Image 1 (cartoon, rainbow, N blue to C red):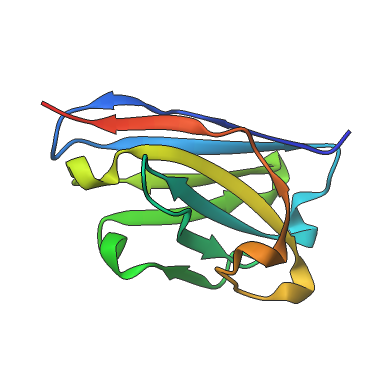
Image 2: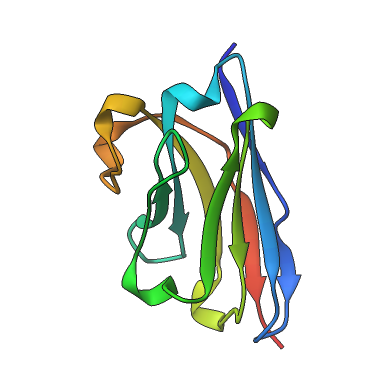
Length: 125
């Protein structure tokens, strides 16, 4: 069974850091582009970052550039999102998702075929 499981969310103060993990099972991760998305209350689903299947290319939405870093370890079938300098506006349910590698480096929701259940990130003092 193909599955993505996120972990690492939690409550953190503004300016703090969290590292999210996305563990894949039932799939070979290096066949997929990995994306991170977030959904805050009363806001639309937002693409945060994407990393190519080989890890050599990354892209970020403007609001997280310079603060978030996406990475992957294909040998461990796991992807990560390091989040630094967190702001209250980063509060959301964070999802990882997988798109076929031929999709390239994409932030289009429709390209992603497998999704995790999400991990909550709350930034508050």
